[in-house]
Amino acid sequence: MVHIGYMRLGQRLARVRQPWHSRHALAALPFVLIVAITLADIRAPQTVHLGPLLVVAPAITTSFAGYRLTALVGTLAVGAQALIATVQGGFDENHVAQLIGLAFLSVFAVFVCFLRDRRSEELAQVRSVAEAAQRALLRPLPDRLGALHIASSYLAAAKEARIGGDLYAAARTGGRTRLIIGDVRGKGLAAVGEAATLLGAFREAAHQHATLPALARALDRSVCRHLAEFPERDEEAQEHFITALLIEIPDSSPVIRVINCGHPPPLLIRSGRTTHLTTPDPAPPLGMWDLGPDGHGTYTSSFRPGDTLLLYTDGVVEARDRSRTFYPLERRVAHWNRSSPRALVQRIQQDLYAHADGTLADDAAILAIQRTPPQHTGLHLGDLVHTERVYSRAREESE
Image (tube, rainbow, N blue to C red; front, side, top):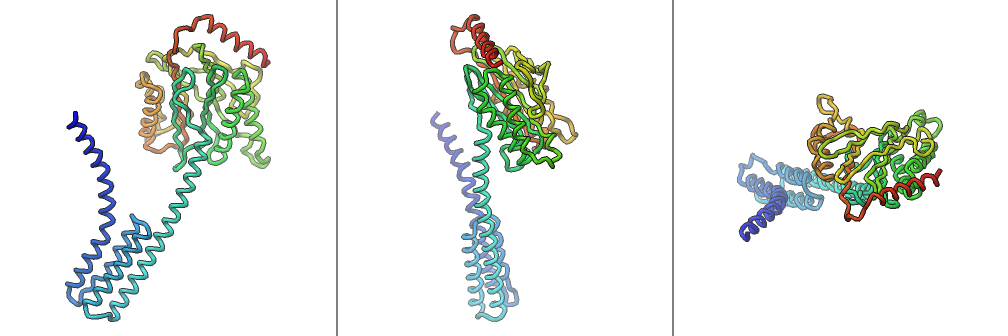
């Protein structure tokens, strides 16, 4: 066992040393070139001039090093050119021209490298601020909420982006977990703004409304208020909406309540079988119309311990391969129906990227929710009936 431990330690140290050696080998290359070119020019006949090749050293340094190392290499290259001139009998017009040209090109390389490093620092700062803003907007979900295990993934279509027009969030209130997953019509900063509006409204309204339909109506009003801020001259103002799936999972009842606002139906994984959880009375997308009285569009289904619910946006099922074939989510999930939520999300993410050849045309959000077995055995049927009565009473009060 000790021998195996030393072997593993040696392998880790080897992996650490390999990048270190690679970086230092690159840094040594311009110095080796300066020495080699200088010696070759000194030993070459008077009619052969290899000194101009010294400009290669600072030129290649800019490709992997900063302006300080580039300046050092350029200075050494100029010094090497002066040494060649001294050894070969003095500074004639040819050597002076080579020195001036080499010095000018070295200064120019340092200047270009300085500008590149400065822009890289500015870009790094912008990225850090953007990532902080994106993390604040789309907060990572905890691995566990109440009696649920949760795993999530967000795949942004735009490069260097962490979020876009897709969204998801979860809230704990009154012995139940409420979740939302949605997709804003459109792309770009406008879609991010609408997603931020809906996320903020959900995080606040999820704790204020006793029933899921009341929560949906409140979210619809928030989206409508946001969309009303569009200028009247914007012809697309009337076409903006957000498809969303609102879910409520009580801790003490093996059920799930769903309001589908024009969103792709979730997948229910139970006992190794995968089926679509299709709501018989779907509601319109948020921002298009009032959802009406309580209960409209609400669908209740069983959600037992061990069941897994897979939520996703249309960026998943509409991803195409090179032959323009859509991603077969349900068929692929059928092969992983025994996986944990985290493993399931990771496998879908990797398989989706492979299917789309590493490039997604639209943002894709994935959310896996699994109900865990109860922590104790003191739960009886009477408790479940009592919980349902409490929920019904709250619903009647909201009416």
